[in-house]
Image (cartoon, rainbow, N blue to C red):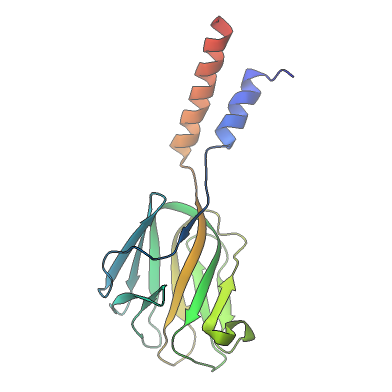
Length: 182
């Protein structure tokens, strides 16, 4: 089977190397301070709270100290990632019927009610479907109580930067030209 040089370049340019990774928070910097960081597969996650609460690793979950109503906490990523699933843990048991809201920098927000049966046992797995190029996620609570929700096992794939895709295309064209001369 023969494949044209243009087709080869297009295939290589659209199939930049990507791999699945998971933030498990087993190795972090800044535990117990207002800014916590961890790096997985070359992508650094930085977590902060709008209330300047300390960020902690608790039972393996990234979570702030208890924060008041109206406060949020956020994660930013050093480069875009595609998030396919994550676990949440409710450290303050609330059942007011209000929502925990997970808002990505791109994609649709995911919500779960504080009294949802999915949170039975205090842990739930959420599976966003369109978080394909996320550089940050903000967590908020629509209720009036103090709250504390953590995240763990954030499954993601780094999104190739356009320069990487372009470099692969140039490489493919160079390889094809070299093979043609041989």
